[in-house]
Image (cartoon, rainbow, N blue to C red; front, top):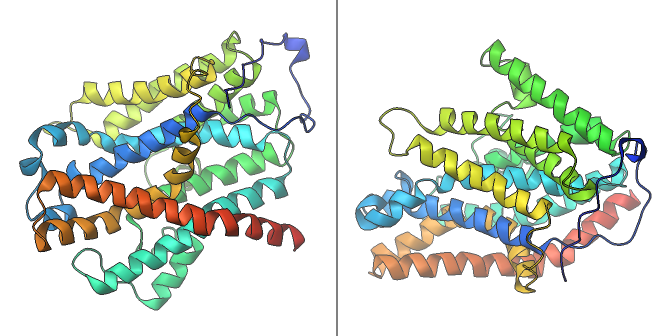
Length: 371
């Protein structure tokens, strides 16, 4: 399956101002599936070899002493999250076009929750078996985690990576209320991107701890906004100046938030490498938007995209669990331990996709529609 060829830029008079009618099935952008898995692997290798903390206990020493060369590169793997957010902006804009608010809500719930619930059960079980890896939560805390609202409720997280889901949920809510509810159009997306950018800048100027910062998320907004604008480039043609201007501004603001949030004098990360990594994230999605990756049409990319979400959910704590058992208990050398752990988490992700997401996602969506 090849990528869709971007349409030529319409004249301003022909830019749609009403929701596009349902058309032929969307062509899957296989290159995006590959980028999603690449971002997940960046975060995974950061959690296994690019940071200290709990994983140091699993390795029995700091990973930078075990993988001195690799850890210098994987220390930047945390920016895979920002990469995810750019991709998410693109995908959400694409998948919501021509859909109602109810369709949008059902698709998000059916996509997020089945694999998430299974990951919660698996990690909670691992915490009972080996509490040294992750602290077991109380029943009330576990139940709140099932709702995906544990972070605003101040409840300990079962999954360390689920803080990003709270960011995603807020993005979905903003986009749904401002764009999907009245109907997705080119102009509404442009207006949403412009207003959100302005709100993010103003909330930053207002200071920390405000309601505005909680809602508009100035530290993450540039990545989502850049992804939204890049989908406009893909749908309406890369000759339009306005979407590229939004992308450029989002990239500049994203460079600032990345270097401000994850770098400081004396840190192990180089601020210029941080800026290069963020730039590559925007550039990779821009290449898809401009139609330069239509050659990437390998069928296995569909599987890569399907594995990304469950892999992202389970890799952190269960990976630390596996490293502790393989390396410390069974004496497997570091590099084979790393390889077996990554492949094992990918295998577990495939099982979750095959036996949880594939059968139960559509059932949950149909049940929501029936009710």
